[in-house]
Length: 108
Ligand code: TYC
Image (cartoon, rainbow, N blue to C red; front, side, top):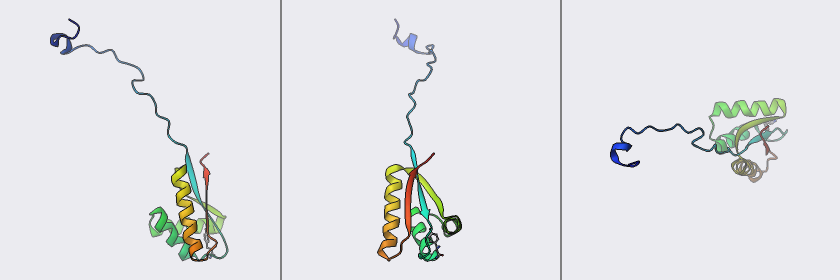
């Protein structure tokens, strides 16, 4: 009787609270661009564009902020992605002999 087609058609459903379990989001980590006195500005912009896929304009803004304030948050990612991008961007600079540094830290 309960599952007969006549019973199923237009059956009344009881609303369930919290049908889905909330899925925890992974904590995000900031990638930070650190200023130095030696790396050329144009090179910083080139690395930012290459590793973070941002526009020339955005890269220039981030570079100038790091240059004037000492550091600038580039973007936030999951920890693994943030660390990998910071390492790759820093290595790009080492390959050219520049001291440019990208670090990471947990957000908030
Ligand atoms: N301060 C560098 C210069 O004057 C440019 C620079 C900007 C370097 C930002 C690093 O994160 C940086 N050539």
